[in-house]
Image (cartoon, rainbow, N blue to C red; front, side, top):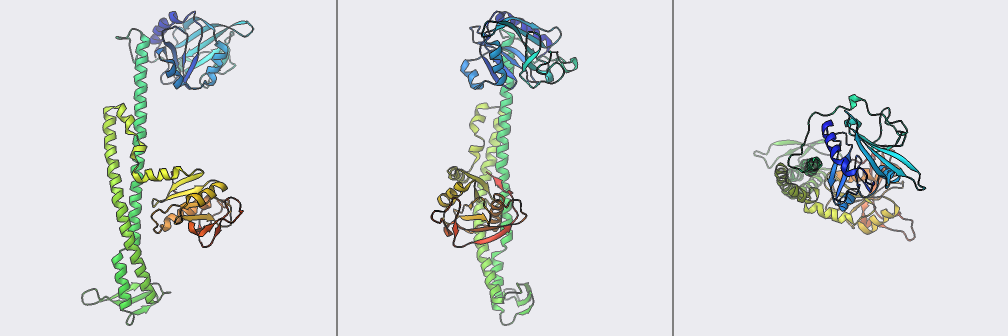
Length: 480
C-alpha cells in the first residue's frame, strides 16, 4: 500500500473504531493480525506487516474461520491481550508523509491504575512491523524480529530511516464498485493469496509427479544394467555345450582354452577365457548355472519392465492432466488431483500399506526396488524380526556390535540381487556401534534360520546358518 491508500483507509476505519474496546486478537500468521473491536457488523481490523505486502483494512470473516486460521495464541497476541485487554481506543492517526499508523489506547491494570499504550503499525516495506509502546514511547514488544536503531525492544521508538521507507507509486487496487476501500483491498489480497496458494499447490503436485517419474526412470536404468550384467543366456549355454563337447580335444593354456566351434560353419577354432582354477567340466557347469540365472533374470526383468512402462505411461498421462488443470487455473480440480497419493501405483500402495503396520522401523528402497526395513531399538528389532519378517526375507546385522536388525522383504521368494544385499548391509553397519569404522563385517541369513533363546534380552537372536559380507557403513539408498 502507498501513502495515499493508507491515508484513505485510516479515514475510513477511524470513525468506526475510536471509542471502542479492544477485544480478541487473532494472530493469523507470523506477520498478520485480526483484531476484534466489536463493531457488531462482523468486521475485524486486519493488519499485515509482511515486507512484500504490508497493509491495513477491514475484513469480514466468521469467528470460526479466524479461529481455524489461528488455533493457538502466539506470543505477540498474548502480550496485546495482557496490555490492551478491554482498553479503549482513543485515536487512530497516520504519521504525515509516512506509512505509519498509530493506535492510542487508554488501559488499566488489575488494581485500577490507568495508563496509555500505543500500537504502531509500521507499513514500511522491509522495515514493516507492529510495535507496542508504553506511555513514554519505549518499545514493549514487536510482532516481527526488530532491526535497527529505535526498533529494538526496550528502545525509545524511532521510525525507520526514509531510505527504508519509500512508498510504492503503483496502487494495485481501487474502490471501483465496492462500497468501501477496505472491501476492495480485502478482495484484491484474497485473490492474490488464492493465486499464491494455487501456484504453491501446483508446484508441489508437479514436484511429486516428477519425483515419481524420476524414480521409475532410475529403476529402468538399473534393470537395463542388470540385464546386461547377466549376459546372453543362449551364449552361456552354447559355451557350456562346447566345453563338454571339446573335453578330449581342447587345448588349454592357463586361463585360455581353444575349442572347436561345432555351431559355426566349417567348425572353426575359437579361444575362450575360463577360470584357470576350474576343470573344463566345472567351467561348463558354471556356464550352465549362469545360463539358468540369465534366463530367469531375463524373464523377471522383462516382466518388471512391462509393469514399469505401464506405470510410466500412467504417470505421463497424469502429468499432462496436471498441466491442463494448471493452465486452466482450476483450483477444485487441482485439489481433487491428489498429487502424491493418486500417482502411486498398486505396488507402491501395497508396500505403503504393508509397512504402515511396522512401528519403530525406518523404511528404504534398494536400487533394485526391494523394500528394506531397519529397526530403531532393541524391542523394535524383536518386533521386526520375529513378528514382521517372513521366513524367506533376508535378515542382516553388524557382526560383533550392537545395532539395528535389517530386513530385506522378499515376497517373490526369488534370489535377492547382490547389490541390494550390499546396500542393506551398509545400512546395518551404519545403524550399529561400528558406524565410524571404515569396514564392517555384516552377517546375513534368511529369517527362517533365526531363533530367540529363551529368556534372552530384547534384540538377541541365535543363527543356525549365516554368511558374512564386509562393507563400508552408509545410508546411500532412497528413504521412504
